[in-house]
Length: 153
Image (tube, rainbow, N blue to C red; front, side, top):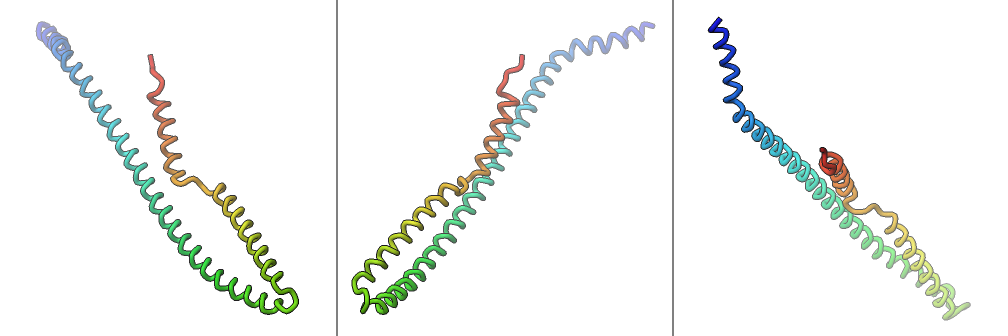
C-alpha cells in the first residue's frame, strides 16, 4: 500500500514540477502558432506578388501587341486613304473643283471624331489593370479582419 501511495505521490509531485514546464510549453505553443501565422502570411504575400508579376507581364505583352497592330493598321490605312483621296479628287475635280477637297476634309474630320469617341468608350469599359491581384488583396484583408480584427474577450 505504501508503494501505491508512493506511486500516486510520484505523479502528483511530477505535476508540481511540470507546472513551470507547462508555462514553457504554453509559450512554445504560442511561438509555434506565431511562426505558422508568419509563414502563412509570407506564403500569401508571395502568392500575391507572383500574381501581380504575372498580370504585369500579361499587360505589358498585351500593350505591346496592341501598339504594333495599331501602328501597322495606321500606316496601311494612311496609304489606302491617300490613294482613295487622290482618286476621288482626280475623278471629281472637273465637276466640283476645290469643293471635293473640302468634302474629303470634312469626311475625315468626322471619321476622326467618331474614332476618338469610340476609343474613349473602350477605355472606360476596359478592365482595371491588376484587378485579380487587387481582388485577392481585398479577400485577404476581409479574411484577416474577420479572424483578427475583432478582439475576443
